[in-house]
Length: 427
Image 1 (cartoon, helix red, strand yellow):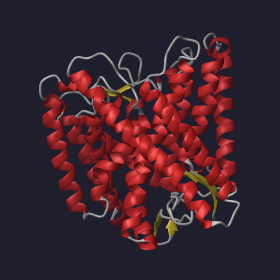
Image 2: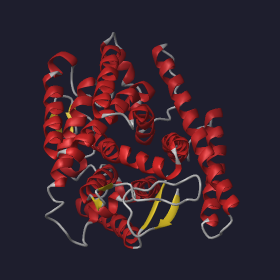
Image 3: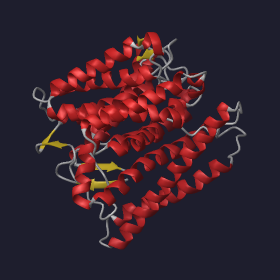
Image 4: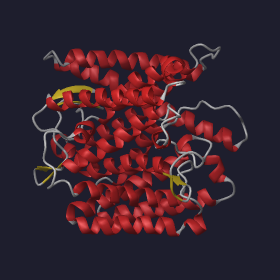
């Protein structure tokens, strides 16, 4: 991650050469606010709704982030309202993936662009691994939980990554290029290694599930799923639209065959988002998203038609392939996730030429998704863990609303401060 200052920024990437970032979310040199707003909407929902879920007495607000069919807001067979947020965030990545890579390729060459994006995807998994470790340590702080060998390995690597981050911040105040490169490499290589180890350990978890073993390392949540999806979709980043569609279709068919065979659906459901195997489903979702993005930048109407067809096909196939189930990343979930995300984004595009105001909270949130993730985890996560018994568990409706509103205001002010100063922190 790096703190940067630019005049026009939309999505940030950190170069291995000199930490300079460029504006990569452009179409004919015009910034697309709907992408920032859409991404901000996704991040806001993922973070704030998750916080409000802690309060059981807020009625529909408590149910917004609930993925269970018993307590969540069911919108389609097997699918709750909360289930659409992760696919929507993946869709936001798909919108700028090709543009971003192409910009990097032109600036620094194909080799460095490939290294950067593979490293970036693995680093996202690495950050998720670090957050999982923190969550385990917080949740078991007062218990007799003993760190296993993998926990200790990740703890050591996390300390090295934090040292690398500190060195990167220090390097931003110097002109020593060698120092900057060394700081970059310490940070990125460590996170990349954590990402690789996470993939391996989650694959072992799935093998244990298949073989009936009960032991789990349990290091797989949202960020890991996002990073792995990027790895799966990366080979198609420069492909023509029809190649993306054909490639995603083939992977989806193969995944569908596996998903529908025997009790594989139940096995995949044992790990959040289906783990590494389910990650192929999320990856093919991202490739389809990139396909719709290609259509969008050529002609919005075609993107609208494609999104509607994906949604309709997914719902239609429920009768043969089963519910639209996020837990195992079911084939119907892949199709509906792509389609609904596209339709929601296209609604945001309607405001591009309508709403022009300096007061644009969703755009502020959308410019710094990674840092908002981290701030929410360390601030609201720590708040929830340490003060649950005293302020959350038995909170009145008024107290719960005040806490939720305060969280929204403070996080929005933080996002605004970064936006106003034209600063971004990202991988």
